[in-house]
Amino acid sequence: MNRRNLLKIASSATATALVTTKESTAAQQVARATRGTPTPIIKDVQVIATAPAGLRLAVVKILTDQDGLYGYGCATFTQRADLVVAAVDRYLKPFLVGKPADRIDDTWQACYNSSYWRNGPVLNNAISGVDQALWDIKGRQAGMPVYQLLGGKCREAADCYGHAGGAEIQECVDSARQYIAQGFRHVRVQVGVPGMAGYGAGRSGVNVKALHNAPVFEPAAYIRRALKLFEECRKQLGDEIELCHDVHERITPTQAIQMCKDVEQFRLFFFEDPLSPEDIAYYRIIRQQCATPIAMGELFNSPHEWTPLIAERLIDYIRVHVSQAGGLTPCRKMAAFAEHFNVRTAWHGPGDVSPIGHAANVALDLACYNFGVQEYSAFNQRTREVFSNCPVMKDGYLYANEAPGWGIEVDEKAAKKYPFGNEPGERGKLNGGWGEIRKRDGTLIKQ
Ligand code: GCO
Ligand code: MG
Image (spheres, helix red, strand yellow):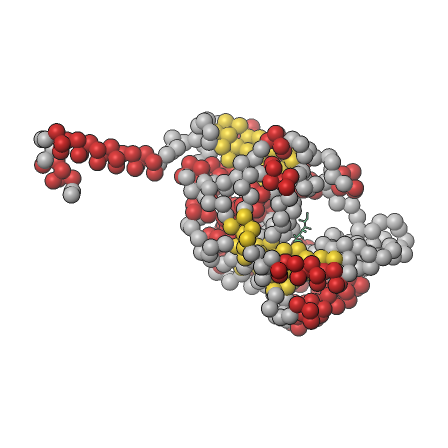
């Protein structure tokens, strides 16, 4: 019945009651839809520094002037976490307190420009913590998970790859089998190099002889070993399993060109970081010589790194560490840009991303059409003690938890049980930083 008819019969008490009920219901509906829209003002900006899995995580918490309205954002740069904490405390907090919490991109731009010099890992991670916290607040206000604020689902869940590794080839193949048994359709395979410091794999044998005492890595020995690994994986695991591999920027550009050609026969799902960010111009040569799918991006901080690779279609998967690029706001723009060039996403998702950061990955995974694959690292029991409702892993798929915002609460008392400074070995001595890896002759390897 339309409003005019309603008003016609408005004379009788019942009718009046009917109009009042309808309007009050309508008013309630409007109030519910615009709940929390008196602009929330940033009241405090804090950083939760915790290492429940022995890797330094930094999470920004933004509190607003509306009781119970706050949000979390991942700001994790594990090798320089103390500097990110200082960048938030000393610079972003005084810059933000008193500002509105509901202007996300504007706040991002203001923080990004407030240091004048920009596009560096420390400041980008600090800004990411703020950015993701504002998205969390927006979701909590709207009563929606962040992926809904980005436009809703393009898929039910994010198809993931796990990390299979081993000091010996058979150990890695067996580890891959475990992921396949858990339902994973994609597995990253990494194997150690006897006597050397391999990436993503254990070490075996006695240290090779060198002119120094640092861990040794010889690119050529790694390449020979990796090619044998892929051959064995295909022989034992078959063609169906999607294999990924991370070179981790440890070989020369010409070795990278050759290795990309050599691995073409193994039909990898992707071949990650064959080049360092400083050498990305060589991708033009690799692209002309083989069809091996390339993934690159976790080390990128600036649009000047990813835009040419995407625009020239020199990579297949953009693998940015979301907080390293400045947070959800720049990465959703990056994903949209990449879609036009059919470059797909494969957000960085190792153990040194907090569950908040993994939730941001999943929000992008679900809402962006050009999703490729999601890197997955399991959350150990201590991490789950600190972060409730971590994204759910099932049959090799990662699911959003469907609660408003990221849907994650941080138990700050539990976080304090795992302070920075208790990391094992060299990482502890170096405040979460990495040591050196060198060739036999002492030449430093970018690791
Ligand atoms: C990956 C990465 C990581 C990085 C680590 C650095 O592909 O997951 O290469 O393993 O080495 O995140 O801190
Ligand atoms: Mg990597």
